[in-house]
Length: 408
Image (cartoon, rainbow, N blue to C red; front, side):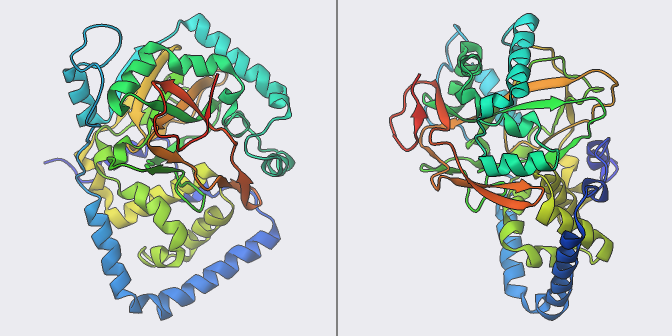
């Protein structure tokens, strides 16, 4: 008989703890803020939470509805019978339906990957010519605290850098995405990830509508859409990605369960109620409040993961198996953003892992209709205006006209 919690034990390799995710500096003023919030929560837990049985029942009913979700592809997908180009055949589509990802495939040569990596780093060294798509206020705060990595500074920068737009448009990527999303595919956000030596892990997370720290979901489908198909990630290794330098890890098939994505959004609007569902611990509360108010987006993901385990149980993950995805420079991995994923820490002394990510959806999805977002800065949440044009076409046309799409 399989040991309960065996998958969780594998997932936790190199991940650390909730307390380690909260190991960052905050001023004494913010410590007072954190402690005040804890005092308010303690009062809520013992004086108000016992009377919220109806809300508790509704919470668990909603959670139950997010289990065992079938992965449904759009009614019209392309190339299922084609033996030419790079559209997916039936067996490949069936593999994706079961697992929520496509195995890595080669897109460009190692030399081309190196040239693109060097271009991105050169632009970063030039501060992307003073252009921050997250807003000047966010950049100024993060620079003041010595925390403006390419992961943040480089967000949306493919809007300026045509070689990265063309990379995502290559038929090897675009045809596969069109086979899964339909014949109108856009990239709504791009990012770079530079995992330096002695850099920590990325904790397990999933995301469907990408509310993240904002007030509203950034991806809002206008047609009936499976949560696992609202966004697909095209993750391209621009250097070799290994266990040692922090390769990606997936939980294939976990896109059939959307509860952790739901909890990420739920906790933001129901903070005290959510915490009242957890075992009571003052030490944990301090780490939770610290991350909740002043943690990075990665720390907030860790907060949701570690607290979700308390609610869902350690054996929740046992129906899945961990897949470590080592990749060669120039290879691409396509996977549902709802498939749980993480990465190892980089334990090397001089080997950097560098990748480029295109977040892709279809044109019937409204992208950030509010035009605003919030960034979890070192000084708390900062609201900023999103780019006037944040998307560009990957495949086909735009017959809906919901989004401002770059025409190049």
